[in-house]
Amino acid sequence: MKSFNEIAEFGKKLASLSNMDNALELIGEEAKRLSNSERCSIFIVDDEDNMLWTKLNNGIGRIVIGLDSGIVGDTYTKKEGQIVNNPYEDSRFLPSIDKKSGFITKNMLSVPIFNSKREVMGVMQLLNKSRFDFDDKDLEILTFLANYISGSLELVLMQDN
Image (cartoon, rainbow, N blue to C red; front, side):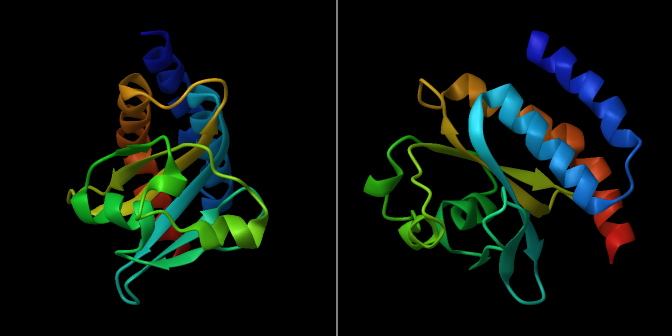
């Protein structure tokens, strides 16, 4: 229960932000802390161009992929979280992003972020949980976080347009 209480405290901080970059940075830091992960990327859905793009990705430059590309695209399409503890053995994995950035993905967890209409507006992806693989408890906590921050993120996205 400690994690859920921590998320509630985090929500108070998030509610005070109106800038998308600041909100995404705060969400990413909290997601990494809760899951003990090395990186967090938050992909935003662009229905007009059928793309997912990152606004937050730990400084490796903007990532843009198709709505049906990779594990993030699969998370978007299926509207459910994914745990992938052997990404290089998963046919959905996009190793070209690692190759471009020089980063090596050891494990990942991705969860959809729904808007108020229950449509996926984004996907939060966490990479490289330290010491252990991602598990169902991580998925539960990060799904809770995604649901918790969805209203704030939706408001920030509307203001940013």
